[in-house]
Structures are given as C-alpha cells and as structure tokens.
Amino acid sequence: MPSKEDSKKRLDAVVAEARRNRDERDKGYRERALKLYPWVCGRCAREFTRENLRELTVHHRDHNHDNNPLDGSNWELLCLYCHDNEHSRYIDSEYGSASGESKQQGATHNPFADLASLLKDK
Image (cartoon, rainbow, N blue to C red):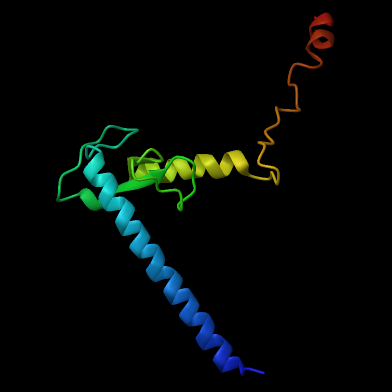
C-alpha cells in the first residue's frame, strides 16, 4: 500500500502535468486565433496592439476548451472584461440547473394585487 507521501507526490505530478498540457494547448490555439482574427474585441470592438495584446483573450463559443478546430470556428477574441462578462452570463444561465435548462422564474409578488379594493374606498 503506497504511503501518504507517495500518493501526494503522484497527485502533485499529475496536477503539474495537467497544467503543463493546458498551458501548451492554450498557447497553441491562442497563437492560431491571433493569426486568424484581427486584434479587436468581438463584443466591445476595442482594438489591441502588441503593447496590450495580453488583455485580448480567446473565448470558446461552445465553452468547451478542448474543442479547437483548426479553422477557428469555435473561437472569438474578447478583451478580458467582455470575456469575464460572457462567462458570468453563461454561469448565470446554468445556475441551479442540473439538466442545463435555465430555471429563471418571474416575480411572485404583485404590488398591485389589492389596488382595486384600495381605490374602491376612495
């Protein structure tokens, strides 16, 4: 039976390898996306130069970071702010739903529910 220390070392190695693989994958599709598309945010139309290019990110339209077709059809370039907003909206739409359907409900309180009776007395 492996010791706790051996298990921790193996786990650390697996995590480190996963991070290296992710960084390599990210670098590959980011570089391709920057060659395919103009350096402009797809939402706010902010333009980027080499000096601020680090603020331009690659967004996966289907939210699957492993879906990286060579033609770039699953990517769009977004600035940091628009990218964060896009993911926040996606999370909000999925919040509380195990099936992936949005569970948005309308308001249940009606401030005018008893208005007719209040006006009748006047």
